[in-house]
Length: 69
Image (cartoon, rainbow, N blue to C red; front, top):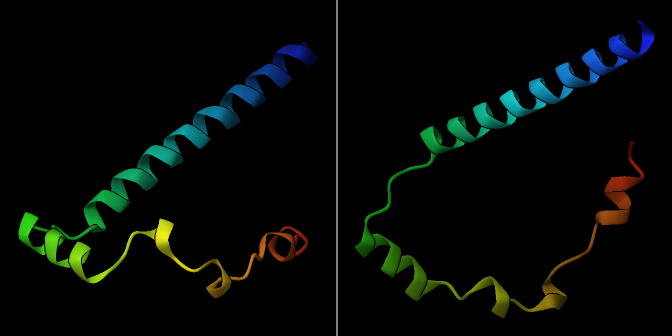
């Protein structure tokens, strides 16, 4: 009986995570403004690709964030 309870609990957790993930995606799509092809081209011409960013302009905060919990 304990194994079945644990399995059910795990299944519920996974199901809830999946639903939350789907709803979060749906919300982000709703909130995302429409950009026409012309607007997109203007944006691309003004800003470089993230692969061209200067690495020295960023600070890796991974360790700091991971130790906050």
